[in-house]
Amino acid sequence: MAGTFTNAGSKEILDYIGNNVAIDGTPGTLYMALWTADPGDTGASGAEISGTSYAREVISWGTPTTANPASMANDAPVEFNGGAAVGGDWNSGSAIPGFAIFTHVSSGVMIASGTLTDQTKVVTNGDTVTFATAAVTITLT
Image 1 (tube, rainbow, N blue to C red):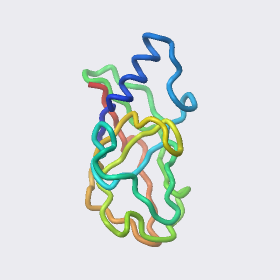
Image 2: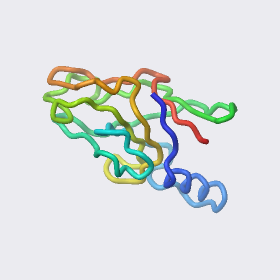
Image 3: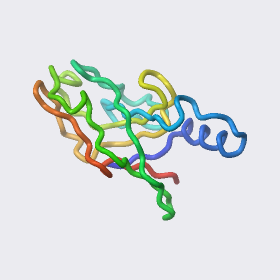
Image 4: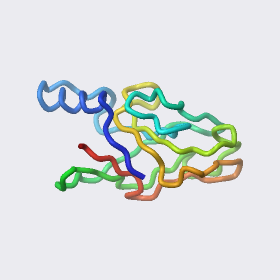
């Protein structure tokens, strides 16, 4: 799956680089959220999913590439619900096609968003939800 930085995420990066303004949230800690659609640049498309045992999960990143365009991928698995089976249906039993990266575990600035490679996945009671190392990539264009 691939995503791009949002306008708000780009502003955070430029403020940090050009104005020495701290990026919103805890430095180095970002959270992955699952979305009912491609969130787009502002999160106005769809909404964050809900369901038993659902919460945003910490995502950590590897070293950005020097390719054009530059990108980076998660450097460890992202395991929702601690890797344990979920206790109920997520997103009311509908597919989960999108994701977003936030600066806080709740609310915060959405700095990147995109669509999942498999946009037909339905998470039901007893499923586990894990994104393998290097499965989540964001690109700065």
